[in-house]
Length: 321
Length: 255
Image: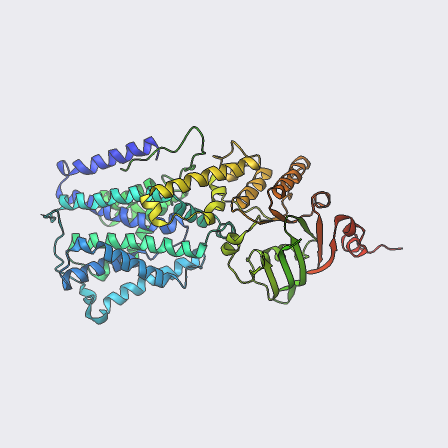
C-alpha cells in the first residue's frame, strides 16, 4: 500500500469516526448505507474486478446471508452477530453450488445467467419455502445486535459496527490482492487460456472467487438484517445487483479504493439530489453516462505495479486503514 | 535414450477437417526437436493436443511414461510440460515479474487463508517465488524490466517473457510455438542461444518454427507435418534432403 493510499484511508476512517459529532441521525444512517454498499461492492469486486467474471446477481448472495442470519436469530434465538460465520458459509456454499454449472461461461453469457439467478432467489423467498422466509412480508422482529455487552440500536452505534467491518474487509482484501491467490484471480481476468497454460487451475479459482465474494456479501446481509430488524424479498431486487455492479465499474474495477469511492458516490449522490425530487434519478443517470464517456476505466483504476523486484527495495509491511 | 514424450497414432478432427491424423513421434529426453510444416499442417493443433488445450480423438500421448491424454492443461503443466503461444498470450496489464510469477503458481501452495493471514511460511514461499521469477527474467535477458507492464515491452521481449514464464514452472519439457515469430535477425540469433541454454539446464525443447534457418541451426531432430500427417522425420540433414519435404515446401519440380 502506498503512503498516499494509507493517508487517504486514515483520513476516511477519521471522518467516519467523528462524523456523529456534526452529522444528524439521517446522514449518519446514509453513511451506514454507504458502509453496507461498500461491503457489497468489495464482495462483488472479488468476482467482477479481480477475477473478471460478470456477475449481476450479487443481491442473491446478500439475500442468502441476510435470511440465514434472520432465520437463525428469530427461530433459534442466536445472537445476530454470532450468525456471521454461518451466513458466510451458507452463502459461499450456495454460490459454489449454483455457480458450478455456469462458471465456465464467458462475459455476457454469465451476466445473463447471474441475472436469472438473482431473480430465482428473490422469487423463491417470496414463495416462502418450508415456511422459513415469511413470503412477501419477510422476517421481522430480529433482535438488535450486542457487542461486548453493548446493545447496538442507534444509527451512530451501527456506524462503528458497520465501518469497523469495512475496515477489516479493506485490510484483508488488500492482503488478498497481493498474494498468490489474488494473482491467480488477476491471471484469470487477464487471459484465462494463458492462466491455465501457466499452471493455474482456472476452474477452481473461478469457483473460489465466487464463493469468497458470496461469503462477504452474505456477511453484509447479516449486518443489514441486524440494522433493519426486518428483511423482505424486495430489499434484494435486481436493482440492488445493478447498483452494486455500477459501483464497481464506476469506481474502477479491481481497485479497492476505487470501489469504495464508487459505492459512496452511488449512495450519496441521489441523497444530495433529493431537491430535484423525481428528476434526481435522471440527473444521477446523466452523470453516470458522462462518467462512462469521459472515464470508462473508472474513477480510481487499478495501479500497477503491485509487486517489487527483490533487491534493495523490499516490499514494506503494510498498515491497515 | 529414453523418450520423454511419446505420441502414438494421434488424430484430431474439427468437424469434417482432419487437423491431425495418425501422427506418431518421440521426443527424447534432453533433445531439441523441431516440428515444421507449411501453414495449416496441424503443428499448433499437435501442440494443443500435447498441452491439453484439445483432446485427441484417437491415439495416446505419454509424458515420462504417464498417459496425459484427457488431463486438464494445468495438470499437464504441473507434470512438467510448459508452453508458449504462437500469438503471444501474456497478462498484458500486469508487470513482467507478475507474468513470470504465474509460472511459479503450480509450484507454490499458499491458499486463501495464507493470503488473508499471511503466516511466516506463506511469506517465505512468496519471497522465494519472487526471487525465482526474477532469476528467470535475468536468464532471458530481461533483468531490470521486472516492473514494466508486459504490454509496454517490445515484441521480442514479450516473446522472451513468455519463455521466462514457461521456465518458471520447472518444466521437463518446454513447447515453444513459433518463438522467433516477428523477431528480427539479431533477436533470432539470441533466441538460438537461449534455446541452447535451456537445453543445457536439462530441459527438453520441442518447437514449431517457420524460420528454417533457425530450425536447421538448433534442432537435433525434425518432424515434418503436411495436411495433418507426418511426412518425414530425421536429422536436419536428412530432412533437408528428403524429396517429399522439398515437394511439400517448394512444390513439385516441373521439367
